[in-house]
Amino acid sequence: MIGILDSGIGGVSVLKEIVKLIPNGYFIYYSDSINNPYGDKSDDEVYAIVKEKVDYFLSRGVVAIVLACNTASAICAKKLRSEYPDTLFIAIEPAYKMVYDHNPLGKTLVMATKGTINSEKFLALYHKYDNDNTILLPCSGLAELVEKDDQTLIDNYLDEHLKDYKGVDNVVLGCTHYPLIKNNIKKVLGDVNFFDGSNGVSRELLRQLELRGINYIKDGDRLHFEFIDSSNDFSKELRFKKILESND
Image 1: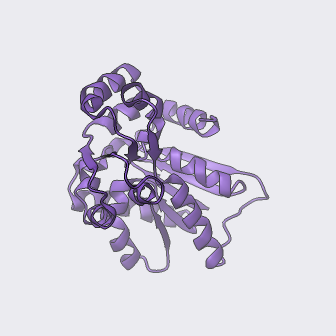
Image 2: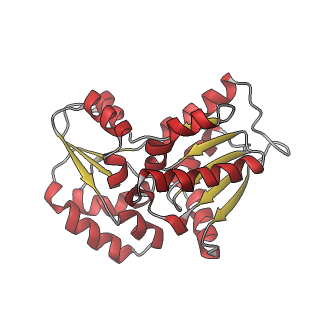
C-alpha cells in the first residue's frame, strides 16, 4: 500500500497523476481536513500533526508515503527521513523549476500558502531559478475555500487577490488544492500556463519504488484505494471519488 497525505481534498490532484503511472496500486488517501490549513500553523505544529499521520500509515503497513502537501513537504520531509530512515518518503514541491525549463522569461505568479513561501526549502528553489520576473503571492484562506467547495466564495477571493496580476504568463500552483480551481483562476487571469508538482512527484514515486524493488501492488492487478477524512465527513469521500474519476 502507498499512503498519500494532504491537509484535505487537494492532494487528490496528486493521486490522479500517480494512478496514471500506477493503475494497479493500492492507496490509502488521508484527508486531514480537520487540521486544514497546514500553511498557517507553526513548523512544530505541522510536524506533530504529520508525524501522527505517518505513524498511522506505518501501522497499516504502507510501503511508501507521499506528502501531497507543499507545506508538509517543505517543513517535514527532511526530518521525517531522518527519524524514519527505513521509510520511503516522496515530497511534493512547487513546480518553480518547470517555469525555468519551459518558459523562463515569462512573467510568473507563484500562488502558495504562507508556510510554503516562507519555507527554507522553497526559498532555496526560488533563489536558484529566479527569473527576476516573479511575484510570490501568499494565498491565506484559499485552501479552506477550496476545501469547502463554495464556488462563489472562491471566485470572489480570486477576483480580489488576482486582479492586479492580469497579464502574467505563468502561474505556479504551489498548493495541491489549487489545481482543483484552474478554471476559476482562468476567469481572472485568462489563458495562462499552469505549473504544479503533481506529475513530477508521481514520476519520482514510481522511480524510487522500482529502484528500491518495493512491491506496491496488492490483491491482483486493479486499482484499490481507501479514503480517510479526519472530520468523518462522508460528503468528502463522494467528492474525492468524483475528482479522481473526472477527466479534468
